[in-house]
Image (cartoon, rainbow, N blue to C red; front, side):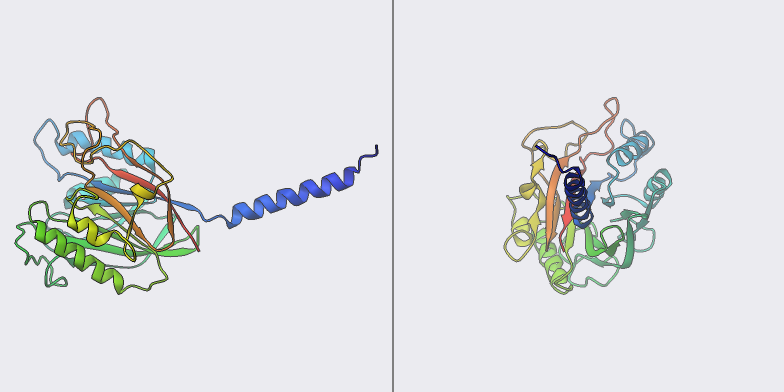
Length: 286
C-alpha cells in the first residue's frame, strides 16, 4: 500500500489551521470577583494591618480581571491599590468625596479600559450624593463602569453595590432601582451586577426582583462547575457548609458562567475579611 505523505501533511496542516482559527475565535474568559473587605479597623485580632497582606496575597493568587469591593475606606482602598500594581480603580465614598465606605471597582489595566463611569445612591433621590430616604441609617450606593475588554474586543457594564443590612424594604427598593437603571442601558451590552446584597440568594424578595426571566441570571446556579456551597458571611468564624449566600455575581445578556467558587483563603488562620469573596469565570458571547 502506498502512503501519500503529501496528502497527510496537507491534511495535518489544514487541521492545525482550523484548530488555531477556532481558538482565535473563542471568546476570552473574564475573571470577576465580589469582595466585602470589612472596613479598616485597628482593633486586633482582625485589624486592617493584619488583614492587608492576606488581601494582597488573595488578589495575586486569583488574579481577577475586575473586582467589586464593598466597605473599604479611602485609606484601605489606596493600600490595596499600592499592593496590586497591575490594577487601577474607580470609586467614591458613599458620603461624598473620600468620606465613608467605597464601592470601589478595581480592574486590570492591561485587559480592561473604562469608557465611562458614574455613581448613584440607593434612595428616592439617587443622584443626590449621600442621600438616604428608606429608613436605613447607612448610606448605600452603586458604582458602575462601562468597560472595553481589549482582549476580547467587547464592551460590558459592571455594577457594584452594597444593599442595606437592616431594612428589608430598603433592600427591595434598592433592587427595584437597580433594575430601573439597568433597563435604561443599551440592550446589546451585557451587564455584570455584583456585591454584598445582605440577603440570602433564593430566599429573599430582593433576590426575586433581580433574578428571573428578562432580568438577571445568578452565576452560582448556572455555573458549569462550582465550589462547595459555603455561606459568604462568616464573621471570622471560618467556612460553614450550606450557609446563606449573601454576596452574589449576577449577569444579564449573553454571558455564560464557566465556574464559580466561594474563596475561603486564609493565612495561618487569618482571614482577609469577615466575608468570603466570590469568584466567577465568565465568557461573554458575541
